[in-house]
Length: 275
Image (cartoon, rainbow, N blue to C red; front, side, top):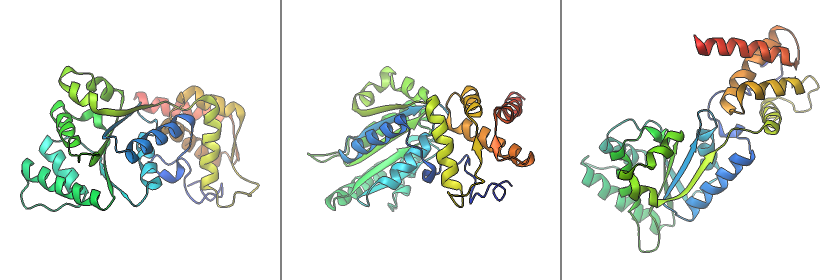
């Protein structure tokens, strides 16, 4: 609605996990470096945790774009299923065709696929998002898949992405063997106060039709302070609040988003969240 008014080619604060809008804060840059290291060094199991809305899914999609053609990905978005169904989803997402759908046949087909890909110098990565929903049996299945290896390297890299409850679940005695196989664990932190200003500027700059346009929307320093106060640095909440603020600015016919606009929008959003 407000894109034409602000001379934007797209919504800068869309809630989707768009890697083109990835912001390299300190915590997100470190997460990328850790994941790329774990993948390239074929470390096996990698874990990424973070609170809701800290940008974990966007982070994974950024990894997909940064990686070379030698690295092939499978992305599992909804792991609320049985361990057999999880295995079927992984095999299907990797494009492996099997006549039989039982566990033995699927693992056999996956192993043959991984050996063939490895012989061509390819690296296979399975990313499981919302992994805090995985059951103990499913996580044990993940551990067994991580055992697929040659004498020299892991054939399959598995990235478990989830909320902090995932870390808590991995501490269970029944998952001791899996926990010992986690080579990289990175916890994504919310944005720091100074990052919020750069984050907002980064997203608007990405979305404007002409970066040199003098009528570009601006958030005042007091507005930035308010945004950090209300969002605690959560990228998703920042997006929701800034999107509402741009709409309010459009209605008020202003290119300057001040703290009053932010405060009013925050009240609306908080009201919606509590009712």
